[in-house]
Length: 266
Image (cartoon, rainbow, N blue to C red):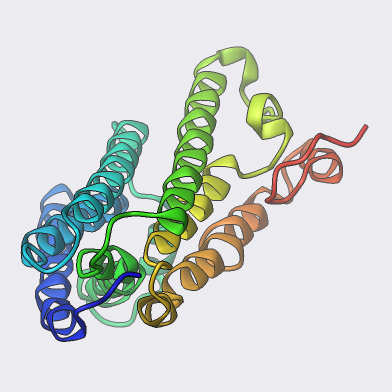
């Protein structure tokens, strides 16, 4: 049976929020210097990594060292892989169309509007979504059933995300595929293998704290919020609205699962 230090966990919430805020403010400065705010997408994974490392340091002597290290490593591997991938994908490109459209309609100073609506909002989301990562460090007792199940689900998620991103990058790099819809590999099983991968990663990290019912209940908001963002928020729903008029997308949508992987329909 795992115990949990509620007082120590509560004391660590503010420093973790400060870490997420610091990453976003530093990224805002970079965005101002470069003249593009798409850099915030790179900071998303970095901010989670920094929060995980801060929480790992703060929880020293409080929780099980194996779980503390496991969660810190899993979060850092996911966050840094995502940051590197997005940085490579955006190299040499101008502003992201999403941000360009939003800032074109911004009231007042567009940079300050971006600070409020993009950077600070994402910093707050990082803090809330990372609650299981923060809580895991204060659980006593070794990693057991729920914890290993969570690590396994995390691995499935990272596989889908990494392989899906690699397959899409190779597809786009071939000039013969210009204007075509990617419908091969994992993309034949789900229209969003990368988003499904994120979904598995964060439900997996949540399962690691499910050895204790109290922390599980307190951090359930994390995977629920991430699932909403991936499926109905800025992920799948927004992307498919932009792709709806592309030639071939309707046929692709009719034969391919919208999220959970399954064999394509004929």
